Image (cartoon, rainbow, N blue to C red; front, side, top):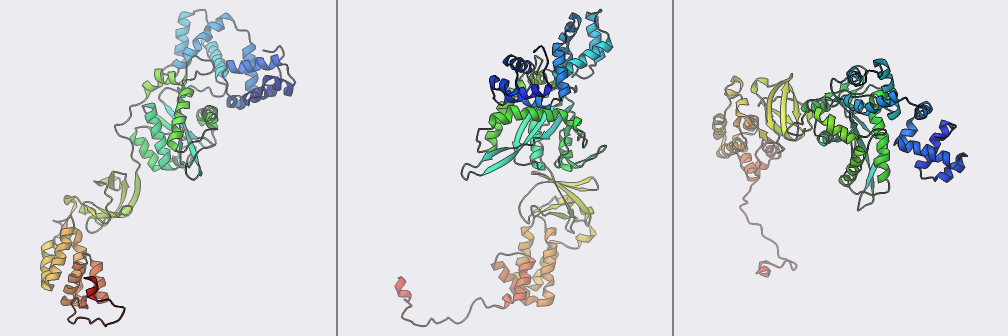
Amino acid sequence: MANKQIEMRKVKRIFKLYSAGVSKRQISKQLGLSRNTVTKYIAFFKRYKLTAYEVDALTLEELHKLFQSEQRTKSEQLQTLERYFPYFDKELRKTGVTKQLLWQEYHAKHPDGFQLSQFRYWYREWTKEVSPVMHFTHKAGDKLFIDYTGKKLHIVDKHTGEIQDLEVFVCVLGSSQYTYVEARASQKKEDFIQCVENALWYYGGVPQALVPDNLRAAVTKSSRYEPKVNETFADFAEHYETAVLPTRAYRPRDKAIVENAVRIIYTRVFAPLRNQTFHSGADLNKAILELLDVHNKMPFRGREYSRYSLFKEIESLELKPLPVKRYEIKLYAKATVHKNSHIYLSKDKHYYSVPYQHIGKHVKIIFSNSLVEIFYKEERLAAHGREKRKYAYTTVKEHMPSHHRFISEWNSEKFIDWASNIGAHCKEYIIEILDKKQHPEQSYKSCLGILHLAKKAGNERLDNACKRASGYQAYNYNMIDRILKKGWDKLDEDPEEDIEIPGHNNIRGGNYYK
């Protein structure tokens, strides 16, 4: 180090220029310093493996302390203690390990060494030296910190040349700082949850808590004491048996570890990719994972171990196991149980049965890609495999109120007998309606509506309308009502007289086509 310490502003300027690719000779000329001084300061930063973003994040006071610690003459007793610090740093991440316990182990080997208060002081000073930006000690397997980068990556459409910006998701395990990064189309709920899930499977386990920033996809309403977590994200956390602990608004220290990770990712992921062109998100994420592997295996500054080695040795052992199946994002809807004991899911235009005791009640529908669940006041009334056939019915026979007084007076035999009194075509038409449904009771409204039309139109017209509707292969109340209103039931389908085609020079006649 130079004999006389220069201003910290110039020190930061040296490293900024050097990181930008400016030669040591040019830095020397620009700042009015000797080349030896420039070389010594650059060597200092390299020795501590500081990135450009880490140096930029240091205050002048922190940088000054860092140089003072480099110049301080250390006693042999202190040097002996400091050799234990990397080991202590790893051990403190384990559940139940405290500084007092580690001091007892140290003091047993070195009875003439430092007492507990001095031990704590020198360990705190050492952590400031090796981690001037962030020096909290998180327990292994405890928390996963989640955020997005401010800057974006992009892909280019191969055919049109259109540029699409992608959001960059970053998360880091608190103890090992093992990092996961993924580029995604948006920060919407579906993309956000998919990123978190991919991260958990990348780690091969689940931490005790997820700590997102106050993202819309994660937090519905922020609060210092009790933030309201998005319903879908809370359900996701329940599936993985973990908790959600959003960071407090305007409390940067709550998320300092992930913000520091973002700064490093700018250097170790964004910068290497800046001159490359990708045509798909899959190709971009493949390149990100390759750079991420290098980043995670790079040793910490001032230590001999890396994020990856810490994760494998300590943190992976503390993570809870993954569930058997991945999470399916759930959507929510409201409905009323119809008199035929079914609810209507408008998204798919499909009907699902509910026990008849709940007819008329307002219920909540929770559905995923494979399952539809129906709830009333937190009680699950029914569960069905999801079907996407429009206007079809999914029915559990036990749900239908066949034995209930309200429905028991209506049955298929009664409808058929009623229709036979109107006419043969009407009878056949009603039978077709009953046969096309999974359960006759699903059609009672259609049958009632059709048969009641006889009061307005008469039996003969209704029978003719059923005959014409059968020819159209249309079996529903609306078609019969339309035929009667338009008078189509009165149209003669078999005209008695043949229509004579007039002769004309431009008409070729039938013989032309023989």
